[in-house]
Length: 614
Image (cartoon, rainbow, N blue to C red):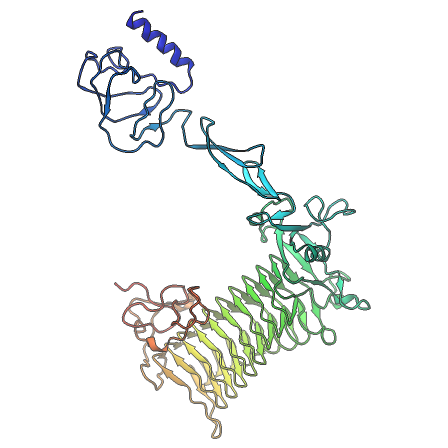
């Protein structure tokens, strides 16, 4: 058979074959370059199947030039092939081939489930790349992914689930182990979950408390959390993974409005009652009204009594209480409270948003707004309560004393990287009041736009001497002590701070010490910018030149005299573990923005560290 007949037959075969590479050159010979086939020159190979091979092939053999014709091909290129061309007449070399064929070896194209429940990963030629085992008693492969069977979750599908969903046509016979067989009350799910050691998933909807603490009083109905049981809201009601939920898009409401709708006089005393090591995540807790006799006079939204649950991504709104903690009351309890909002809660006595009595919760990334109380509109700490409050905002809260935060009876919280704005107090401490030997540590905080009769920003009374470091106190107002008010042997330590633009209608725009011969207040102020001046090491009376105080930007401008004017030795320890290294003894590592606290020769004054030093 002649060479041209051979070539035509090969072309026909290639056109019928999948992935065949048809390689031609100008003289009609395969792999040819226009000269005779007995040559030692350099051939440039052009693949018409979109394989771009730019390597040099030195062909020292003879014949029609097939890659598989038995002559010697020496590849002098460099690089490593992503895959081997193993289709008809293809090269298997060590060079990088850019293959845009329909069939691309080793490039993942799909995932399917095997008969034994594992994931089979296929390339574009339907060849197996990998088998991923999904070995689990309660799981297997579904839609090409390892997953858990209905009623199970976790990396090893070893966490059982109980589901709650409102609006099903019937709940008769439901066991709660699937969305289709969900239960209709949260308490029923918690009771099952506690026995089976399960997790509870709750679909969007409105749910009422149903467990009565006193069978004779309907208003004692509550949602009683279970120890070591986690409950999550924010589901649509068909999810297979917890990560699929969205508690903002799918609000899950726990409401105390168990009686006449809109009439709070017959509402539940406590919408939720805590349990040790329980978790509640992704709920709106509202309409509790703790106006009964003890113990039903505290904790309208949530009551934790000698229990320390984890409370995350929850909103406490429009709850009421007569004594303490309209939003949340902690009695000898130290819950972890993270990413929560306390808004528009009202308490007659103390702690509109939260009250802590002999309790030291860890409160992180929370917002307290529009709450009201006689003492501590946003938060009230009393009786040796020393919570750690980090990255929180207190705004537009109001009280007679301690509009944003009140600490009393030897309560010494750590308040770190927080913002207090536009809180008000009819008497003292627009943003914060400390009294009765309370010694909080306040670091990297901003106090602005707060107002009170005494101590627009901070009021310290009756032997209360907080440590205030790297704080910015600007544009607060009061009758006396626009920025800070001290009385009755209260002598705070103020370091690396800015007190500027505060006003007092009578006396002490920035700092006022109430005169007393028997109990004088003598604060120690150092390395701070105080408008009008103040005696102490390193203090300056120079405009701090913040970026824009009218718009609330209190970062330092490049020409600020506060840059490197603070004292590194004044920094407190990292009580809030801002860098999450479990070292609370090191100096505070970050500023309010989360940037390094020490940049340049020393630290700056104020809540922010200037970062643009060369």
